[in-house]
Length: 201
Ligand code: GRF
Image (cartoon, rainbow, N blue to C red; front, side):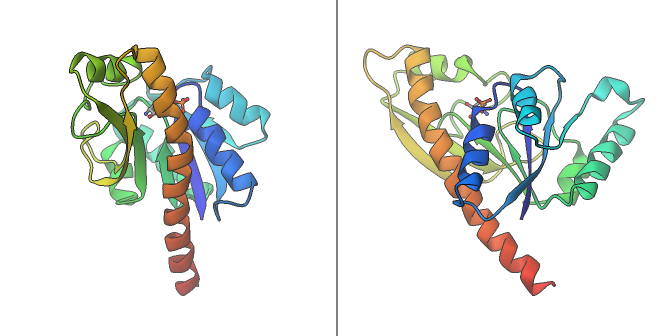
């Protein structure tokens, strides 16, 4: 299975997935790493590690359709079967959603459907969880559709919120689980998609 990773930030989830693949834990290959910004740490890291990278910069295209066509073109060129969003902060164009129906996943650092939606990213999520007095948070992996954090939930893992937590301490505990959990879920996708690819061979 060929995997594309889209990111907008540090890229620690991307690195964890790349390491899991390297260690033979996921039967997949990362054939594309993309970001909406050229100077993202995650993209620079991917480039340094020798991965094929690209930038999806909407402002370089006259309209949404040509932007989506560029995205679709490169996904096809890199023979991508699954797209994993790992801290990607842009919406996916409708044409790409249609072409990759049930083949785009996202990771969210809380237990959706709570604490999701527009503006719910980074420390905002963990701050909201603590302010709501929740005793547990967690990680959600879900299918991507046209609304932020609203696609079908694929898997969740719980993480405790401690009484003395501040957003940063909770974020660090959740992120550690994310790194392990995302790889486990992508592994399941890879096994299933590899089987389908063999059948269609
Ligand atoms: C993670 O917390 C992920 O759940 C969210 O964005 C963050 C990305 O972190 N969608 P990183 O760039 O993988 O370090």
